[in-house]
Amino acid sequence: MILLNPGPVNLSDRVRNALLRPDLCHREVEFSQLQSKIREQLLQVYGLEGDRWAAVLLTGSGTAAMEAMISSLVPNDGKLLVIENGVYGERLSKIAKIHSIDYITLSHAWDAEIDINGLVKLLDENADITHLAVVHHETTTGRLNNLVELALICQERRIQLLVDGVSSFGGEELNFADWGITACAATANKCLHGVPGTSFVILQRDALPSVATIPRTLYLDLGTYCQQQDRGGTPFTQSVQTFYALTEALQEMAEAGGWSARHSHYNQLASFVRDGLASMGIKPLLPLGSSSVVLNAYYLPDGFSYEKFHDQLKAQDYIIYSGQGNLAQSIFRVSTMGAITSADMERFITVVKQIINNS
Image (tube, one colour):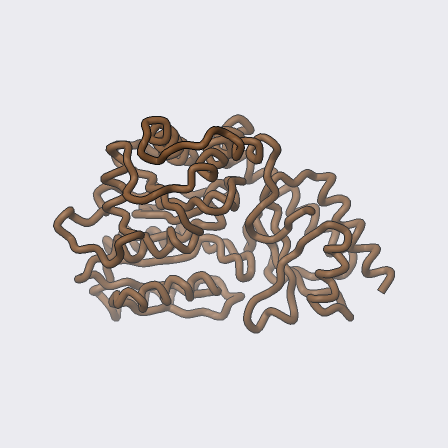
């Protein structure tokens, strides 16, 4: 089955086989070495130095990393601005609300790009904003939010930038230094091609709260994790087998040329799909240049419900993804993450043509 959903992804044989490595106790030196290696590998993806940056590993989904980032790094006397233009931006606001964090939102239609003028106006009206949270790749629509101008505004105002990179880390550019990123939440089972169950936050070490700070959460407190992982330990049991898979996936990506090579591969696949669907009159939701290379959204073919289109593709071993909310009945989504080849996508276009021609 070829998974064209935005995670979990198809695994390579070497990543899948890594799950069969020996069982480990998370309190033994062998696990400590494995954990330390992964933390170093994650920093190497974007060339970050360990004296200034830390990769903090969690057992949980990408949402766990998002929640850990927001709940751990926005202090009690801080104020958060959340940018919403999709489900996952709105999820950041839900996290802030649940943890009683002082926050406001800049909300957009799901298919809209970030309104920079509106952002500046809101910041002018709220000079007490200390942190800004934004989704880099909003998989609701496939939009890649442009962080360059946003980052400059944050730097000028000394606002800490918290990035949801769950669906972009490893597949899109993330310029941590130039963009002034304070922290970025991500996961193993999307662009890194690992297994669901491990997520992480890449953060500036000086953004962590002081040891005297009472955390909002026990399990998701990044300060505790970072302190213990720096010493080779872990506060709670980690998912050992998914760690094995992640270290193998990171090694595989590095050997293939790193994130930029993966970006190029995704772009090739996504362009092929976009052109192939266009030849059948299937239009993209967003204009060219607005979407990530990781996932694109398309309007459903005439005469097809999502369920009908999905089921006929599934019968041919392809899994697509539905729209969400008010887009559920009008679009489908195609991701190019995972161990997917050009031949897989060529056959996908052929299958779509057959389905439409036979309808």
